[in-house]
Length: 190
Picture 1 (cartoon, rainbow, N blue to C red):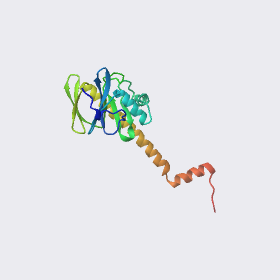
Picture 2: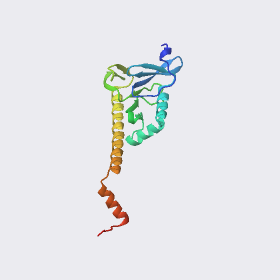
Picture 3: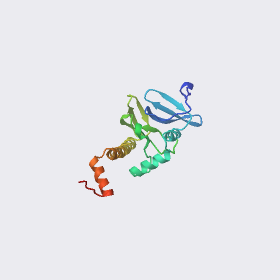
Picture 4: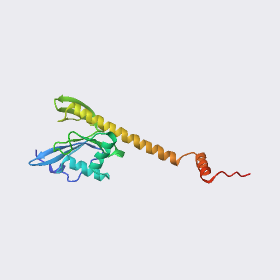
């Protein structure tokens, strides 16, 4: 396959339009095919390298994101990650990220999936385009559910912190008075 110069990009950060990143072999080198909702690009970096760079762009490392997900969910292999939870950028790997054939898929853009053949799943994305991936239906389903669980747990924690912050800033005045009374004692003015 020939690389189109107009679509070759050096720097790329995963963004809300990124649907998936898959490896593409060009000679002896592994590049990345980046598929967005309305565009496609080729990068001279491997998919996992682009995911690493994107995690760093959003203030973390891939290892940190993986460890956080692992601790939160109790899983250790093929861990989904939140590249940027505030923008709903959650991705999951189709195989171990250390393997050259690992594809990273955005959870947000998957609309449906179905078994195509043994070891292959046909995935339809938000833009109504379908792509065939070399992953079994059950493994894809498991990765999709794991990522949904990660998303739910992180959203619950963010909402809990928002409620806690709101409560601390908007607590009733009588609470402040009773706290002051406890701290300084009660004084009655007659």
